[in-house]
Length: 97
Length: 495
Image 1: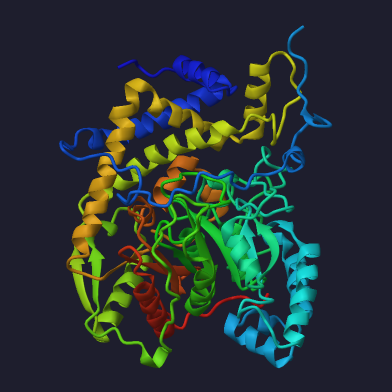
Image 2: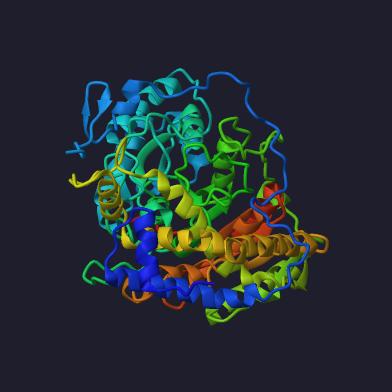
């Protein structure tokens, strides 16, 4: 198991596209350490033969929709929330010089 | 008018039917009150134009004696993490501060179809990640109980649906929709002296609720009375093809008996030992004992039960919450919608800066922590392990239901804390303490309701929680109504 360090947290932040300060990395480190310590009692539990439970009920989804075009938003509706746009296009700044 | 705003839905409906008041007058007064009580910061957006327009239509329907339902013309509020078409939905965040959904959440759609009138979108912790409504870009929601304008300190509203709770508790509206992932409806309902229902997972559609933890999120209902809660539940519950986790079993509307016909004789109520835990306030414990005794004296069979995995629930909940948050928050990149930073060094830098400035520290912390637990080397040790223990927690409940029909517990370990005390703790520590009694119901998907019992020596509401097995809402709410009638809690709405 790789030891958790502030450097690892900063590396992880970069991977998931978040910018964090050293001070914030320290806080995240403390949160993780606290949870990991509290989780020790859970780690040590014997759960042999117990399957993970992703949803509260083990119910098989039986109501998949028909394979038809579902209601989607129109292009005009979609563009309402674009931070920057030009007619039908969402704009971002040119990043290739 | 203030008295009418404090009444229950049935009474107001009768006033509207009788023509003693029009919907337009009711809505005008409601909006005036919302403005007057801005100091509590319950609302992020007031939907005045929308409300007045719908009020006119509703007034016309009453004129021709054709209201759509008993909710027609009734002012309601909705937490600002439910999508409302053409109405800003911010999640109390900078990231979505200008986001205008193009569709309605199913709960909202069903309410307006029944004629209910939205007066505003309510305050919450950013993306519903909190238990105090203190982490909103709009500022904290303030509890109206024991509020002193001359004092900067105040009691928190609880959270994350604090704005919804304040809007109902002050009599600004008759019902509000919150969301409940680990207790976010029940916690503020408890602190503000309201009825707060977390329905069975899948009974009420999540469609249009901006997700926090998909496997635990449910829309919740906040009202002043149990009967009002039933009216709203009957409107919003039932299968929704737009939500793949919606229960397909047809919903049968609940009809609670009148108070004089309610009987709890031989009702088996469990008192779980594990909820008598560290940090449980003496006054809350006393109230818990008093109500258990009250039920026993009236014919219920009270029984101590044990749920041994409860003590592991909160830490497993923390892990699962952060892992699902990490996944859900990946969609926000500031390109198609949401906050975008002024950054042009590279596409990656644009994403990273937008996300870092668009989210607050609590959200960033949870995303990072969740991603850490989801790393390949940690996945089984933390995420899968928490999911296995989740099954044991669910099994605890299943075993208990073999002996009792309902469980009676505290909702929160204490009454509402003062803001200055609350913010001394980290968000994680706040939630670990505040959600202790409420989050097991989310882990198991079962229904739970909180209701106010009495005031503490400091004048703050003390509430209790009732939990039942899946789809036991009729029994759960019947017991809540019985207790409500027995304790006669006095609300504080006429401000």
